[in-house]
Image 1 (cartoon, rainbow, N blue to C red):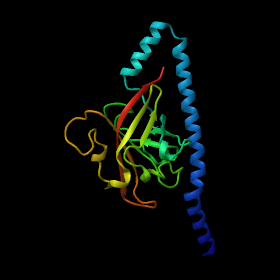
Image 2 (image 1 turned 60 degrees about the vertical axis):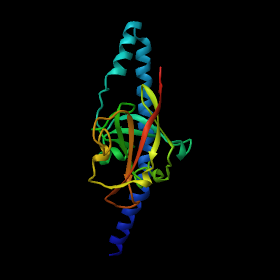
Image 3 (image 1 turned 180 degrees about the vertical axis):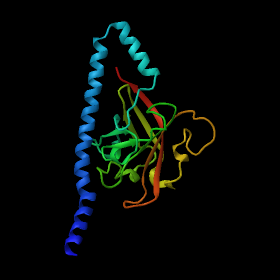
Image 4 (image 1 turned 90 degrees about the horizontal axis):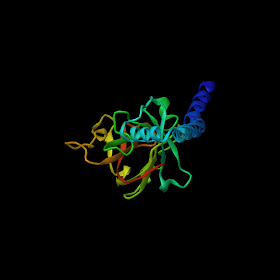
Length: 215
């Protein structure tokens, strides 16, 4: 019985502490791999002929990029969480994906596009990238960097002010919980409402405030 008890304590300890160590290493690997990929794409663009380079740029801006589930697609920075806060955003919200960063709901818009760009992250365990999400206030900036641009969103509805059941999917609609087509670029942040197991989700909404194109 003592052995079983110690085993359970060890498992709990790993879940709440060990997974953070493993996941934070994975965060760094994903960020490094994404930046290396961007640098490679930039080098390829610079070595292309002028006409080919212009064509590539126009295609990249007008066509949605091909996304492979589980791949890193962007970087997330939230100044309110400190200057060092930066986590990768990966395609999909599978368990394995959320252990390596924040996940993008693949049925929602891509960063900067008209519609709803929705992401999810853990508050505890697996690197806990959204540990402080409920501390965000109205007006807080959420910055998303992709290969093409840096998008700055501003929080309209703080996550601590809206809680829904995990079966409520309207928050992922192009125009969240509203009728009609979306008219602007939005961001939805989702995480567990409680620090421990819960069927409730805290939801934050933000709108795109500015776009800074990258060369």
